[in-house]
Length: 338
Image (cartoon, rainbow, N blue to C red; front, side, top):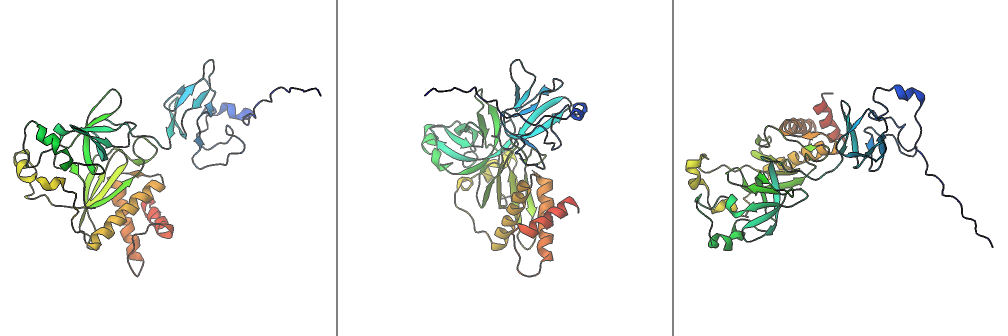
């Protein structure tokens, strides 16, 4: 029996544009949710999303930006990541839905100790490469300023060990993209008495953004006392009970009086139930902001917390920190002013 070899069938093309679309001011780029350049099976979305390998536009007037590339001998701009199309004048880029954090010098980050080496710690800050925290870049107990010795290297696990959380600052960057951290300040160091949250950071879409202040204290309601909030620009967040510094003076001349072995303690203090409730409420506000694609900074967190307290006060009965369902919608309405 003879075998017939059929020619390969062409791939199903995208829907073609109407002639009226050629005069569109966006040059055929789908920025407003138009489905003309999308496969017919794709459902309409509020924020149109492109996927890797998908053609954004073939109009030569546009220049390619981050998250795109142009194929050889072609004018088509093709997406390399999954995300939303961004237009800046005649520059097209694709903002990824999720991306790894890219460190920059001066960034305040929250990290977790992954590995302990002889003279440094390896820290996970959400970047493609683990960051490094040298032994020489931390405060010694008692605030002693001296060269690190072999004794310090043998006792390195008494400062930080695997699994410990810390807040630090990016001091320098290496050619491979890794960051070097330091905690030579009383506002940096080991984290205790709180809860950890991981959200999208500045590398992805939404989440924590760089702002004027990344660390502040909230004077909570309902007897919760003061609560500290640390927004790491890498998308790691720490919410904890506020602990007053002994003596209240953090000047460099008094650092030896304030820095003691307790700053490297892993033992949590007693936290009242009222404080734990307000910590949970702040965590719920941040989670709500992230789920709705809103930015996470001091202004939005404070407004969200105030709205959450007002919504809780409106509901008679037992106080709750749950911000889902109707309560979450009410908080979002108050944030939007509707």
